Image 1: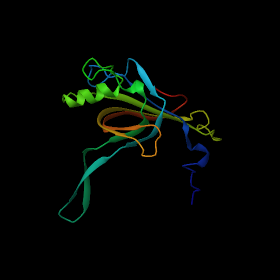
Image 2 (image 1 turned 60 degrees about the vertical axis):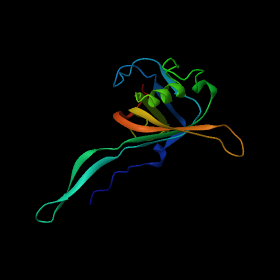
Image 3 (image 1 turned 180 degrees about the vertical axis):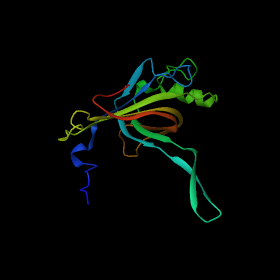
Image 4 (image 1 turned 30 degrees about the vertical axis):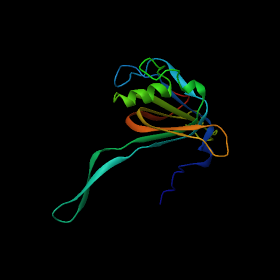
Length: 181
C-alpha cells in the first residue's frame, strides 16, 4: 500500500484576522465587469458563503440510483457593525451606490443590484512547497444582496446589520500569492 499524501495540514490553516471582504460599487452593467471603485469592509464580524449544487435523484428500470445536475442555490450571509458611513442622507436613486440606503432602495423598486464581492484570507506559514509561496485564498463572486436585518443588543454595544442574498456566479476560488480584486 502506498503511503497517503497529507491533506488539510494544520500549519496551512486560515487566519481570520488577516482576512478581508471587499466589494465593487454597483454599476449599470449587469452582470458587473469587475472594474471600478472597490470598498473594503473594516468592521466585518462574520461572513459565510454556501455553495449548493443541486441534484435531481432518479432511478433506472434496474433500480440503480442516479443524480443529475439541477441548478445551484448558492447563498451569502455577512454580519457587520453598522457605521454611519454605510447609510446615506437620502433614500433614492441618488443615494451613494456603496451604501445600504442605495441597496435597499433598489430592492424596494424591484430593481435589485449585483455586486462583485471578494473575500481573501491569509494562511499560516507552511513548510512544504508549493504552499509556502501561495498562502492566500481568494473567493470572488457576484452577489444579489436581497435581505437586510438590523439589530441592537439589549445590553448595548454597536448596532449590527446582516446582509444576505443569492450568489449569482462564482468567478474564482483560488490559492495565490496575494489578495485578488
